[in-house]
Each structure stands twice: as C-alpha cells, then as structure tokens.
Image (cartoon, helix red, strand yellow):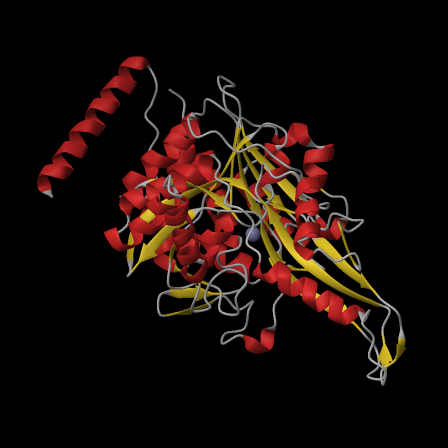
Length: 477
Ligand SMILES: [Zn+2]
C-alpha cells in the first residue's frame, strides 16, 4: 500500500515538474470524498422532478440545470420545440485543437404505476445504501454524471483541448422528436462533436464484485410489424373456417415458435468472444460454441442461451415478440378482422423488406396480412456502429481498468437510444453507465421496473469514471 502511494506521489511530482517545464499548471484532481454530498443532492433533486413521459414536462429539469449552470458561470442555452419539453445545451470552451466531445443524458422518465412501488417513485428514498426512484438508472444517473463532470471541470479550471458539451434532451422514452430528433435536425451545430457518450453501457457486478464493463457501440433498430387476419363475419353459433381470430392465433403461434437466424456483427462478435474469455468454463463454453464451425454445436448453444439468457438470445438475431392481440367485440359475433402487433428489433444490418418477406413465409397463410405500420413508432434511423479503435474507446477501456479494475467489452443494446440519430450523422457514440448487480434485473430492480434503484457508492464511482474519461480525452496537453 505504502509503496503504491509513494509511486503515485512520485508520478504526480514528475507530472508537476513536466507541466512546470512546459509552462502549464497541472490541473488539480477533484476531491471525490468532498464531492459526494453534492453528487447525491443533485441526483436526488433530479429524481424528485416528475418528468414521466408522457407528458414529459422536461422543462422542470431544464429550469433546474439552467439555474445551476448560470450560478457556475457555464454558458447554457435552452432549445425547445415545445416549451414544456425543452432541452438544454451547456458548453465549456477548449482551445479547439481537437473536435468537441458531447455528454448526454435524457431528462424524461418512463411511465410508472405508483401503486406498485415500495417507495414513492419520485421520492428518491435512501434505503440500505441504495437510492430508489424512477430514473435511478434510466437516465438521471447519466444526467447527474454529465452535469457533475461539467461543473467540476469548470470549477477546477481544467485547460481543455476541445469543447466539452453537455446535453439534457427530452423525449427519449418514445417521443424523441421533441429531444434528439429536434436538436439533431434543427440545431446540430450546437452539439456537433467527434465523440458522444450516453446511456446503454455499464459495469456488471456479480455477487457484489465488478466483473466486466460494457460499452454500447451499436443498437438494434425498432421496426414493428402488424399482422391483420381477414375473414368472413357471421353469427357466433355457426363456426366458420375463415374465422379471423383462428387464423391470427395460428399466425402468432408460428411467429412465437420461430427464432430468426443468428447474425453476428463486429460488436457482438467481440462481445461474445470477450465474454467467453472472462467467464467461468461452464458458461464460457456456451459463448464459444456459438462461434463454432459445427452447426449442431452452434444450435445447441443457441438453444441453451434462449432458455437461460434471453437478453443474449436477442443480441444474436433480429427478435420478434408478439405483444398486442386485438380482435372481436361480442361473444356471438364472428369478427371479420383481428390484429396482432409484433415488437421487432432488427440487427443493424437487417434488410427490413427481406425480413417482412421472411415473416410472411413463416406465417404461410394468405388470410393473414403482414405489414409495417404506416408510422415508424420508434423513429430511429438505421445507423453504423461506433468504431472500436478510437481514442475514445481506448480511454473508456483505460478508465474502466483504473476505476473498476475490470475488462471492457463492446456491446449492442437490444433497445434503441438517442445515440441512433447522432451515429447516423457519423458521430462516434458510446453508451456508458454505472455498475449494477446482474442479479438486480431478474429480481425486479432494473430500469423500467417498479423498484428502480442504484447503489449510492456506485453513483459516486460512475461520476468519477465519467469525469476521468472526459478529462482523459479533453484535457489540454
Ligand atoms: Zn433511457
């Protein structure tokens, strides 16, 4: 221990001397212990603002942040398509030697069923080392980390080689036209950057210990499909072969039993290879078997993963989940139509038209029409994956080692994020997040759950991680 401190001190001394010779003052590092109170207070403040979307009311967060940035002397601009659903962009100026860096956090929360919550969803109650609230890990954690990073860089007057931009955007949970769609579409110059960081990654803890970090480098494309069965209507006392509900049910059953083919991309290939390398032998075998040249071995691994790790199964393919069934209105009337809605999450290189044709082949029933809805509900463009050989990815890897002492795996999220609109413009975006327990999701403590929570200690560690990644990439040299 002592030896370590001695070495660290001499490195600091060398760094200080080098900086003195270069004529620059070394930037002081934040006092992380002293920052904890403020980090927790701001996190709780944000969690207590009810920005459930719909209706959103994200201006509550924007008002809070505007006051904070004004008090800190950080230039910030409010941009809004709808005044209740505003966005805020703040910017620390750098020398311009490198292109800017953007940190994002969405200000809205997904809907709650307050009656199901142990602690009221907007109370930000502290219990057993955790903070419980809607938004605790989606996305007021990233929001807090981003704003604290900006505030600390500014207070410490860290010289910057590039601008550091912070964006709190509205509408991520299903109405991104007010948030990232609006900003990327009409005010892109305010956020144009070489790199961006947002939600979607994190550190996985198993049995209380951090095991590996994930960085979201690409994401699936939501493209819903509707199935509509058409039949002849009539009196319910006379069953008909053309009954729309019977045809629809058979179609839904076929879709439910179908698993589209496994398709790897650069990100998921690296992820499963990495997972195989760091997992205990029993689990590792399933991941490496996925990449086997023997189709029987691959199929067995795919079956095991579907049974035991549905999240991973979805990462392997375009996924289809029938989530709404509607048809009929009276028990004695045979309806002429019945409809099912499929939640389809396409792998980034999927061809939507070809996939729709495959769905039709699986259903194989001329009475059932399969189509894309007239409106693309997700509103996300298809995007290229972020590169894994960039300075930003390397910085994340290095800071994960330093702060968490874990390896970093690139990953593809099965859900869409606001990074889609920015990757579509060529920005290299990476999803990051705090450490959470792998066991938390299945137990109902994860994002979108009724007991969403985050460990306070992991909030502090995440703020430090976020700050150090940004400092690594932006600090003047
Ligand atoms: Zn989110």
